Image: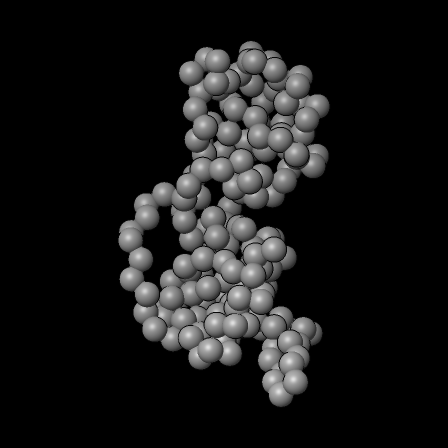
Length: 168
C-alpha cells in the first residue's frame, strides 16, 4: 500500500511510496521526514524513527513536466472516493457517461465511479437517456491532486496546511 507522500526538495509533490521505502530513503539520508504518523514508530536494533507520512528529498530531482494525470480505473474510483455518482453508495465499478459504443472515451471527464447495480441499470445509455442524473460532475485532477487523492481522505485531511492542496 502506498501511504507516504514524497516531496521534491522544493516541496512539490512527486509521488507516493510504501512506508518501508520511505524509511529506507530517510535512513540513507536521501530524505527527511516532514510529517510523521502521530502514534507509529519504526524500530530496529539501534534505530527508532517516527513512521513518515510525508518526506522531502534532500536533493532536487528534475522531473519532466506532466500536464495531466494519467487516466486509470483506480484513479477514477479514488477521485470519486469510491462513491457512486448516481446514488452515493459504495462504488466498485467505473461507468462511462457517454458509453464507448456511442463514441465515449476512457477519459477523466467521461468516467465516474458507480455501484454495480446503477452501472447495470444505466446500461448502454447516457444519464439523460436512462433518467439517472449525476450527483456530481466528473473532473480532471491535476497530477499533484491525483497523488494526494491516492493517499486517502483521512491522510489528506491530516496533511499540513503548507501543502495548500484541495482535492475536490
